[in-house]
Amino acid sequence: MGRKYVIMNSNSYFNSANMNYIFNVEYFENAKDSMINKLNKDIENFEFPKINMFEELMDAKEYKSFILYTTYPGLLMGSGNLHDISCKGAFKLGFSFDYVNGLPYLAGSSLKGILRSVFPEQQKEDKKEYCSYLNGLIGGNEKSEQELIELEHEIFDYADVFLGAYPDNKVNNESVYLASDFITPHKPLKNPNPISFVKIKPGIGFKFHFLLKDGYNMSAEDKCYLFKRLILDLGVGAKTNIGYGKFEEKMNNQF
Image (cartoon, rainbow, N blue to C red; front, side, top):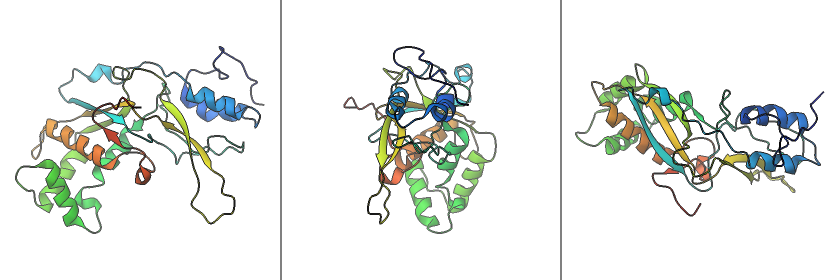
């Protein structure tokens, strides 16, 4: 049997302080049609813990990072995770929360995959276009396709480590990161039902963390710069084709 509601304070119907547990366990245990709007509001208003991720690594020579800010309409990560709940108005899409501390995050493996996706060995066609694009970002003497393939292996197959991306509490003025949104399926239905989901709000600073080494083809600093340019161009997460998952280098005070 699911647990009954225990009101921890006047603002929450959940017991846990970990959003991963709230979203994937307590939300299901307590969801009822009559309560779903209140539960959704509790998730939207949740204050995340102020944690400096990878603080123990920041003095290491290999540690590199940069901060980017989410733009409108926000950031959606982990939507492919199962979150099938029958209540009308419930959040239907999954989301990526750190299992241990509950922070929203982009896993290092996902970050690595996004960055690698534009390198020539990942392309079945249009390799020349991707080579031209990368050369434009890298600058300097133009690299051949083979040189870019060698750079790809140097970055992604050896010593460099992709730690992931988390909200950075040093640049965020608040610790409420989430908001609700919805999409309407593009299917020929007479009465399509909007799908409700949770997202990261615009204007939230995310810090991208790496352990990078100087290589034969590129320095650690240049790798970090390249990664930042790629994230700004590509975005991360789901539904980037309709504007989600985009970033900018400076906070937009309009959000």
